[in-house]
Amino acid sequence: MIDFIARFFKKDKQSKDLAKERLQLVLIHDRINLPPYLLEQMKEELIGVIKRFTEIDEEALDIGIESSDRTVTLVANIPLKGEKKV
Amino acid sequence: MSEVIVITSGKGGEGKTTSTANLGAGLAKLNYNVVLVDTDIGLRNLDIVMGLENRIVYDLIDYFEGRCKLRQALIKDKRLNNLFLLPAAQTRDKTAINAEQMKKLCSELKEQFDYVLIDCPAGIEQGFKNAVAGADRAIIITTPEVSAVRDADRVIGLLEEMNLPRPKLIINRIKPAMVERGEMMNVKDILDILGIDLLGVVPEDENIVITTNRGDLVILKEGSEAGKAYSNIAKRLTGEEVPFLQLKTKYSFRESLKRIIGIRNN
Image (cartoon, rainbow over the protein chains, first blue to last red):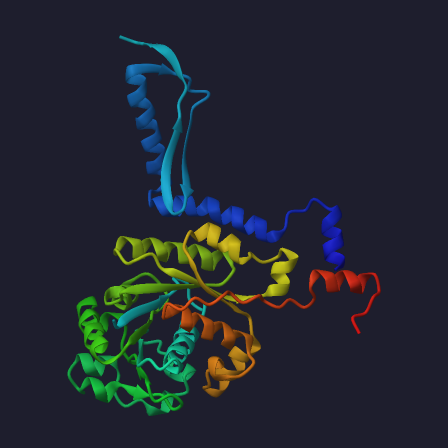
């Protein structure tokens, strides 16, 4: 009960929430079954392909893996700067 | 109509063997003919958990290698006459059997039994592949710890690759008081993470240790919480809808509040 009151006033995260967050993060990578270096390589090549066609804002781009209901999705947010090069 | 169900977890020590024994007894109590197959070659334990360790003459590999007939390797339970055990060999290893043999065995057992429960070894190597080979569906067992949940997720992924229907989950050894304090993941947390349906929740219960010490089964012991949980799971396996148990914590919130402001219940 003391714990309960203490928690009420403290902002400390409960350990179970940490467990959940850590698991969710690690499982995204476990589920794609792709070693980190290949994931990085894939991102770079993906960016390379897009850059052949248009200019992109490399500062703002964001490519990541998301997972919900056991489906893993590659999510890419790549802001384009505009006109085609050629 | 017969079904082969594999009980698996990835990590060791999560309660596969205990769950196999108790669910088998639960199904037998519901008047189904049940056989339990221990596929943990070299580390057999289902026999001792069930208190049948002194009755083994032949084992799984004796049958595969033609030293006995199937019915000679089947050991009848000492409590329930429609429950049987097919023990693993203790002096061999996982490479002594293969997936084809297991498939054939499962279809033979399906002719004689309503439920074939396969106790899977820990790990995701050959032993796991053998255990899963003849299964129609799978049950995943996990405890509320990060390592167990992570390994369970890996196994769920592997079962998906093998085209088995999405497995159902048993959360074992949950401690309601710790869950209430927020120091143990709760059922919803684990279901959110793993993304599969719940089959049941088994609370931590010292009766498991006590009954196992004696070679008894907790499901046959009146008044134990884990036993009640296993009975409900056995019913759910047959398709019956059973509401999930409300797990008892030491004190409810109201009781705790009363205690702190000094009101006693009596």
